[in-house]
Every structure is written in structure tokens, then in C-alpha cells.
Length: 114
Image (cartoon, rainbow, N blue to C red):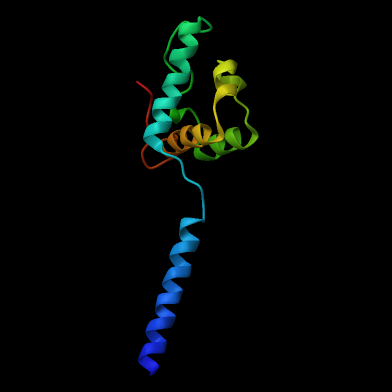
């Protein structure tokens, strides 16, 4: 009897814990974010607004906290290509943020766009 109750309580705790963890924070796709980030600048270059299709800022241009502030406030003026940034959906912005945040200057794996 006690064994069944104990197993039932463990199962309930596991369900609530795993559900809570999955809803804890939204996460984007880093690989898709990298692709989208580069695509924004390629499209902007094709339109003729910028001279190079290389992104203005590499992920290690800012710290993780700076990337978070930038995307929380949606201050993309420093990136250039305003028209392209305005077209992005919230999901696409989340993917780009995830990529930039994961490879920021103070992250475990800083990276530069090549």
C-alpha cells in the first residue's frame, strides 16, 4: 500500500517538474538565428542600403547582458537595415537573440560572423 502511494507521488512530482522546466523560458533556435541574422544583411545588401552583406555586429561585439537589453528594448538602430529588421516576426527575433546571446563576448563559446 505504502509502496503504491510512494510511486504515485514520485510520478506526480516528475510530471510537474518536467512540465515546469519546459515552460520555464522560451528558447529560440541558434542555428536558425545565425541563418536569419546573415540573411537580413544579405537582403539589405541586395536592396543597396549597405555595401557589404557581412553583418555590422558579430555576436562577440556585446556581452550577454547587452544583447538581452538590446532585444528587450528592441533597439535595432545600430544594426542598420531598419526595413529588414521591422519585417522579422517575434519568433525570428527570438532565434536571432538566442544565436547572439549564446555566442556573446562573455559566453562560454564566443563567436564572430565570418
